[in-house]
Length: 353
Image 1 (spheres, rainbow, N blue to C red):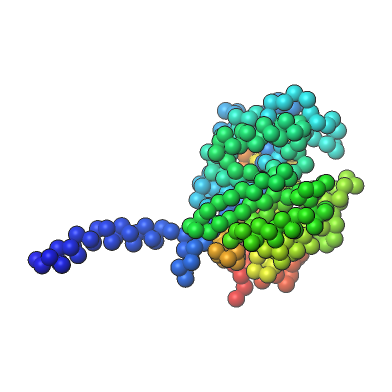
Image 2 (image 1 turned 90 degrees about the vertical axis):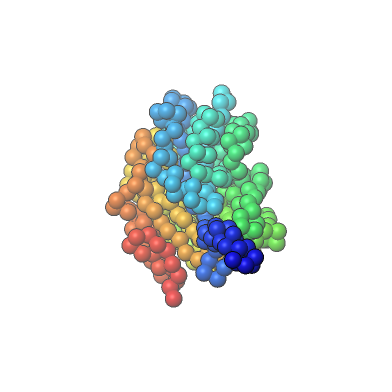
């Protein structure tokens, strides 16, 4: 055996291992890197205010049915509806039927980490239920669990994935900053972020609420006489400024998907894990898990809707009837008939050829 032959033979196992490793990397058919995002709607893991409504085992089983879906994505994102704190004094008084307050123990942050979440939105109307101290305790609990977050205070969650720089920015309604009711400031921030990052992902808490808000309404939406923003216009303007994926929540029901300039908009991901504190009757109990595949330049490559369902005192469970998928497919067709999205019976989302 020649010296060259011996060297070649010795390299075969290494070459095979390298090829196997490369096959595992998230590249598309053309060899460019891709980023996979798993996204869900509202999360409230039980509240001990004003009376305890907490899950058994400190909520350790709440996400058992969805962990495998979340962990296989590069980024897993949800809206944390309510603070993780132990503050005694609420920032406002509860009003039956109109205003609810939540307070979840800080130790529950570990449930989010173990489930596979990597970033949480804190830009919502419950993040300050227990004032600035409650919000600061939430930040501390999430940081301690190794989770990133973004809120109206201005944090950007940052990821470097396969050489792709990703920013996640959370927005809501209400007063500035980061309010889509006052769009000038957040649109300027999005434009700046688009210059600094390869991908910009938005998490937006906005829109009317309830089963009467299933359809995406043009113009400004309102709920209980409060302006909740013009979600369609803001999403379109944000994409024109450089946003690559818009993930909305807040209506407590799933809504349509739209493809705008090659970028995906989810107008509401509904409720996902709202243990005992939010109505889960009818469509409010449909809990979609949206997975999105993005090119390195932000273009939508494909995705999937996996359907789960909530009962009042449970976490999300697989829904063999695929009600979230069927609802979102119908609403997408009705609200955006010209959108080129095709949503298959199994939940696969593709672009019409």
